[in-house]
Amino acid sequence: MTSYKICLLPGDGIGPEIIAEGVKVLDAVGSKHGVTFEYTEAAIGGCAIDEYGTALPESTLEAAKAADAVLLAAVGGPKWDTTDSEKPRPEQGLLGIRKGLELYTNLRPVQIFQALSSASTLRPEVIDGVDLMMVRELTGGVYFGLRERFYDEPGAGVDGAPGQRAYDTMEYREYEIDRIARQAFEAARKRRNKVTSVDKANVLESSRLWREVIHAIHDADYPDVELEDILVDNCAMQLITRPADFDVMVTENMFGDILSDEAAQITGSLGMLASASLGDGTALYEPSHGSAPDIAGRGIANPLAQILSVEMMLRYSFNMQEAANDVRASVTSVLDAGWRTGDIADAATPKDKIVGTVAMGDLVVESL
Ligand code: NAD
Image (cartoon, rainbow, N blue to C red; front, side, top):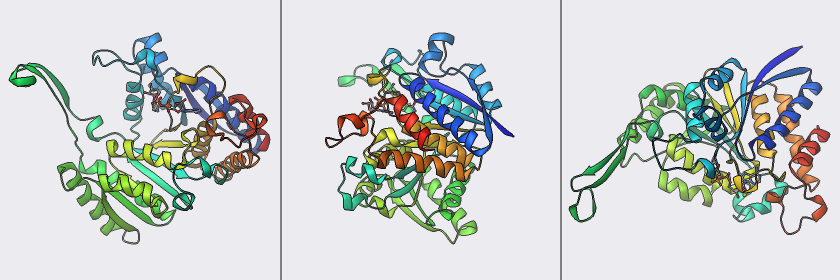
């Protein structure tokens, strides 16, 4: 029997609650499709800071590298919030594992579940047919560039007094743009054959390089794919005025961070969106939302984004397309039957159809 090793990283807040539901679904998929999943668990984020003094212990990175795929829930919480750059912060765990596993591509599908279409703040005719894939560069750009803070800099304070100065650097190398561009064009060929590349080439040098490289690869190897450029500020507007027109959208790290949250909101339900981070080795799957500390430990978190990240794992790491389709169909049928966690319930949802985290996981397993 085929067996896959999964490294589980529950993290903080609602993380442990939702990842348990992801595991439950994986086990159900395993028995249905004749595959076994073996799990190892490791610490990341705030809980790792508490236990090891760092958000990404070496042992966690090793466990992740040794696995066939990594399932992450979420990290962070007010306990570890700090502006002191000397102190460890939970999100360093995320940045570190992306860098450590060389996960240079983040895929975030944005699709509307018909049963939840009223959750969007956009009009039904605007979101009708939305099916886009955000492809975000994940290991370069301003989040990984040189940064520095200067204290008591002459003239940097108010009225010419000494004060503070800080800078961050957005930097891209040609090969970093090359490999993400190829992922985007390949994804487009499996979808509607269109790529929208987002940059700020009217201002930023790194964006001018981005645009040149994207076009060179397109012209040489993917002339069959439709390619359009869009400036990031315009893109922010177009994304909510004509979201159904986009197929694959590719962009650098920080623009992608912001636009993928905006794209997520088109659906109106953050608790439903999954993401995959891919490189050339072990890939990582996680919900798009954070650790929701405001509802942690209450058994009411929505586990569906985590479960849909399991769907992506089956699709991208194990090429189990049928099993992945099963998971999506089960989630769809549970929603169509009217079951909701609190975050996706609306005023019309009957009270007895509102369920907690564990019950929602059970419903998906039952449907499987
Ligand atoms: P968040 O996504 O955690 O929460 C935003 C809102 O959505 C909250 O009201 C929360 O209750 C709700 N929500 C999110 N996921 C939900 C779910 N599955 N079910 C029901 N409701 C859900 O974002 P935030 O509040 O800005 O951040 C909280 C913490 O999470 C911060 O420490 C932040 O740094 C961290 N964070 C982590 C990640 C990650 O691990 N990838 C991503 C974003 C934020």
